[in-house]
Length: 64
Image: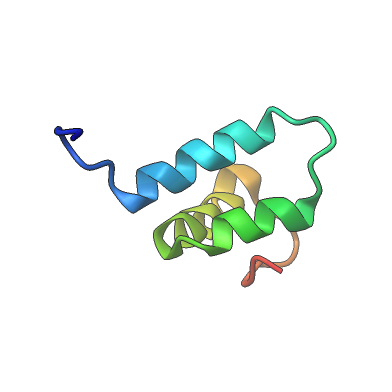
């Protein structure tokens, strides 16, 4: 039996996303599916793309 600390779901989602980003042929839909599975990751992604550093003309309100 394995013992130790449980990795939080958000951390698992981030690790999966980082692993998927290593694939040069990954589709945006596949990335959206990984991000959408974790609400915290989805919110953080939307905050990042809407930050002043990445500011676009239109605010992005959805992962789709």
